[in-house]
Amino acid sequence: MHVQGSFVARTRRTRGWPAAWPAWIVVCMPSAASAHAWNIPYYLPVPLWLYAYAATGTLMVSFMILAFAPGARVPDRRGRSGTRTKALRIPPSIVNAVQAASAAFVVLLIVAGLAGTANPFLNVAMSGFWIWFYLGSLYVGAILGDLHAFTHPFALLLRIAARCFPVLERGRYRYPPRLASWPALGGYIALIALELFGAGRPRDVSLFIVAYVAYALIGACCFGRERWLVHCDTFGLLCRLCAKLSPLKWRRGANGYVIVEPRNPIADMSRDAPADTSVVAFLTFMLSSTAYDGLRDTAAWNTFFWRSIYPHIVGVLPSLGKNYAFSAEILLTWQWLAFALVGVAYFLLFRGCCALGAIGTQSSSGGAFFSRRFCLILLPIAFFYNACHYFTLFWDQGRQIVRLMSDPLGLGWNLLPVAAPEDQVSAAQALVNVGYIWHAQVLLILAGHILSVMLTHAIAMRSGQMAGRAIVGQLPLLVLTIALTISGLWILSLPLA
Image (cartoon, rainbow, N blue to C red; front, top):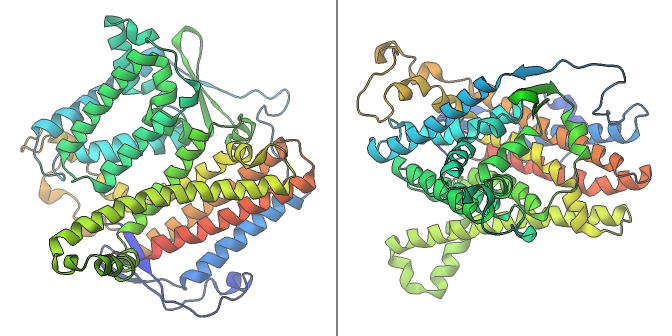
């Protein structure tokens, strides 16, 4: 999802790829490279390939330290013996109040989209849903833990509805185990399709939320409230996955209290049972959809279509050569097809690397089981790339919360004591130095991939295999991690069309 304010850069092609280690020496040396952010020219201090090689070297060093350093061990999530950790106890009244507020916010989004202005910049439905409800839930979960599990607005809706219609509590049918989390993936695909191919109208957001509420009620009626929340709820699964990155664990205690206690996320994830194939597909789609969103509006991607794809279509159907209106429909069809192909390609790429890893460990379970065991290594990569992708959008639109809540329908209200327009910070004053944005994105991508390397090693060590085989099995996943690092930096560096 590109808006004005998203950072893009472009680097010149350079012949020859020097060795990785000299990149550490020259990484601080200035060099010519062009980039743009907010339509402001920006020159990278060094060419993009130096960033790529420096990131590659960092990942390789991290892998070698974990694999060969004698003191590198996976920490035990139970902590040291005799050590007591302090836990925070949250009263149920506070949790219930936050959940009620989140449900009221969802109702506000529906009303604003249906009854408010059609201007997406003045209606709270657009920023409220995409920035605060969708992205905000993911980022809060990754930092503070699975708060969403206790404040989920749709869970409150189903609980209230189940009191009126008891069938929603139990459901009419037994949930088929083969479905696993595939319904949640279907909802996720619909969500991203709305983001990528929707018209950007507040009304569309409201209709999507209404459709999701109907989906929740129908699913609960068929399989029961708890089953729907566990297997079919897209937002619930997204938040549960991102919360695995958090150093805080949330659980229900006695008398309705919620207990929040520290934990080691790497150790906890390494102990998780192998996930279902549907979760593998969910994580690969989480990564591929963000990558495609960043790629589809770039100059390189559009040039590829108009110079490499469209001429072949016109060659088969010459009448389309002068029908410029129909060419837009062809472009839209190509975008849908590419959206599907990129998702499938990421899934097959991960499965292929896992098959090589299974061969390297001489495992009899095969690549499918290997991918289910190691699929969580995609989580930090996908999450941090998501944070990079929406970095400027979150900064630009997230700070509008007070103004939009003061006038949620965009009808000229002033419900909250906000500053007058002339006293507010101007768009130019709110801009962040473009160099800071680029380097923050580089560091975020690198941090996600380093966590992925650490998690790969932790899972391999927990599997009980011989050290040599475990290291060999990690090599294909290390290559995949390096490839994703370079491709992520490359996509972020491309100029918009």
